[in-house]
Image (cartoon, rainbow, N blue to C red):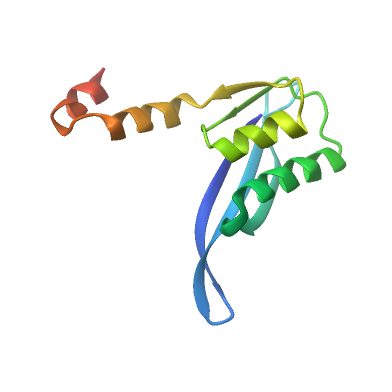
Length: 115
């Protein structure tokens, strides 16, 4: 299962605000990807959204998850460990590379990207 949060600007009550969208994608027994669920939440309570999201997926019948891949957001990882005990968690390599490039000195970014 791949889990990520997207942040979108939405217009609500005549103002624009940032909202989080939790997205879960699974791989079925045929090897096909399926969207397991989308949930719109409030960015002011990200960790609460993570917990509610996983509870909601379990209520809808989510079972048999062996591996979850996500970014290294602390609240998300804590929620995975609380809500889906025993599941192996792995950091998304794309997010890892982006974080590494962000922390690299400007003079090394181009060479690091090539590698």
